[in-house]
Length: 77
Image (cartoon, rainbow, N blue to C red; front, top):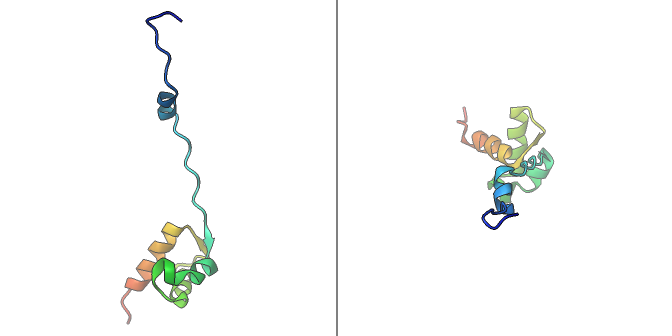
């Protein structure tokens, strides 16, 4: 290597090749129901009903938040 040349910094190489994102973990409805008060501020029955209405038994945390939130906002007829 000559005096005028610079070696590429390892940080620059990392920016070019970002690490692949880890897949989100899916949890069972029973796990969400068990932690429903802490996660959603709702009763376990509400979480179970929301998943049943959606036709799902597993979801990621983000999906579960959407499912339960939508269920709790529905108008009661």
